[in-house]
Every structure is written in structure tokens, then in C-alpha cells.
Length: 443
Image (cartoon, rainbow, N blue to C red):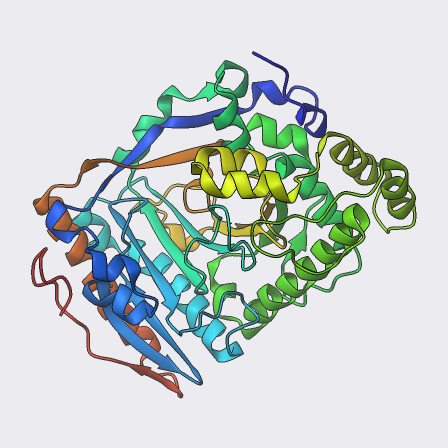
């Protein structure tokens, strides 16, 4: 296998990183519930999600919806999405009250799966949960991390029975597929954590009990920490604190400025390039000089110089050729547009009847920068102590029986969430729809 030009961006021993890129699989919807052409091509999300909308929720100037996902990451998942057209893509695009409602619904999901009756009804014992947002508002050409540009939160749960597939995890060094390595372990997986952490020095989290943790690559390699810049939170209840919505909003603004600064350092330009174009790179000496004056640690600056040495220009003619060929080449050769990152919330404990997940004393908030990888945070995450797990979707059809079970889980959650959030001033839950079969969906 040819050497990876981005290997210099990873820490010593990174080939020992535990990965599970072929083990965790979830099926596609039954054929009768697959997207029809009208849904697939609709610009308006209310038309695109018409059969999959469980409930709509009005909040200030925005409108959220609880949505049954087109391509599930787990049997027990759904998403909360802003449904405007044109889309509001980022945490700063929506009204603060909308963001508070969205994170409150995320907290409700944690409480819901921690409820003993729900755990027994759906056999959720020993499972793990992730709440994920992807931010990739500017990649409009090649396949992106945030395929649907609406600001949305993935609510994901895997019972212990599903996680048993991860017992056969491998090491990164055993993975010979160069394309898969590039996609599942982005070149910024380790360097991005250092750069974001350094840039947050002096940044006020303004959330009681939250703490920015220094990078610890060896802990990541050992499986005791997730990939990405890590902020620890004192439990799930902080999601209901208005300061949490403010933190997410301010982190996005910070990442936006950082991305523009780095784009200018590398290319001399701050604006997002046009679709199917990328700005030409500056000479290495100019990049080094610009980085010398930028407030990052010496290792982070050295890593960015190493990145500059292995990146190559993508001329307009080359980008035009990529536009005409398959996605596999596009995602390997054409960078994403910045800021592109994943924000992930995960408590590194199992959900059990005696100690439910909602009681976890610590929650990990991670920010993972993306440069090439088109796999979003809902499909590439930390599970069962394995730092990098890929969810393979759609290789089989989920049975109609299991899909009905999934629908009962989703409606039970929607009812639970309405009881929690429906009493908040300014929040208006629409009627809860019922699942009327695969052809009709939620009506």
C-alpha cells in the first residue's frame, strides 16, 4: 500500500487506533416507504418530509419538525429539523429560542430512553446515545457532511444488542483500503482538535461546570477519549440551560472566524469559493510566515505547515472533470468548504435500568473538523469505547414489523416531548400524527 501523505498529521502510534468501519450496519426502509421521485426532488422540506413528519413545532420565527429519517443510522433514531425554505443551515441562522427548543428536545430524548418502562418496552438495555449536528453550510458541489442544509439534530440510540457487533473491532493498521481510511479518518482528525483547542484559549464557555480539555492523543488511541476537541459538561441537564444554546451559537461563530482565518493563511482569500472551484494555494513560505504571526501553539502551527506541504492545487479544469465523475473521486480529491465540523454529544457510559443514562455525571461535547471526509457525525462516531465507528446503511431492508416497532418508539417519544415542551410559552406543538402504514406514512 502506498504511504498516506497525511500520515504526518497524526500522532505516533496512530496505526494502533481501534476502528470499526465494517461492523455496525443498519438497514434501509421497506421498499414501500422509500423516497418517491416527488419527495426526492422537492426543494421545500415540508414536501420532502411529508410522509415522514411526526409533528411540527412552531417557535418564534422558525418552525421545527420531528422527522422519521429517510436513511436511518439506527432502528431507534429520528431527527429534529428546522424546515424553512430557503434553509437555515447553522446554529446562528435560527432564533435563540428555536435553538433552546432543539436542545431541550435532545435532553428529552435522553430522559425518554432512560425511562424504565420505555427501556423494557423496546429492549434498550446496555445501549448508547449520541446527539449530533453537522455544520457544512458552504459545500454545494461535492458530497458534503451536511447533505440537507437545514439546521438539524440527529437523535440516535443503539441498544446493547446492536453494539455487540463491535466486539470485532480492528486496528487502523489492519485497514488497507486507502479511500476508506481517508474518509473515515479525516486528515484533520487529530490536528483539527489541536487547532480548535488552541484557538479557544481565552474563550469564555459561560456554562457552569463546563471545561475545555487539553488535547490527549494517546488517550484517544487508548479508547478513553473521543476524537476531536473536547469540552466536558456536568451531565445532560445543561442542555436545558439557555447558556448552552448560547455556547453552541458562539462556538459556531468562533469556528466560522477560525476557518476564514486559516483559509486566508493558506490561500490569501477569505470568501467561500464558487461551486466547483477552490482557491489556489499560496507558496509554502508565505503560509509559514502567516502562521508565524497567528496565535496557535508551536505543535499546531507545525501541523498546519505539514498540511500545507501535502495539499495540492485543484485547477478549475480539474474541478470541472470531478464534477462529471463519481462521488468517490470527488470526496477523495476535493476539499470541503469551511467551516465544516461535527458537534457531538455523548456520555461514555451504557444505559442501564439501575443507573440510567440520564444520570451520567459527565457528557462529552466534541468538535471534529472535516477537510475531506464526507461522512457526517451521525455515521462516524465513538461507540462502545471504540474511537471511530462507521455506520453502514442501506445494505438490506428493515422488515415491516421492525419498522412498525420503530414508529411506535418515535410516536411515544413525540408524545413524551410534547408533554415536556408543549407548556413553554411561545412553543406551539402541532397535532401528533400517526403512522398509517408504509405507503401513507405519517398522517
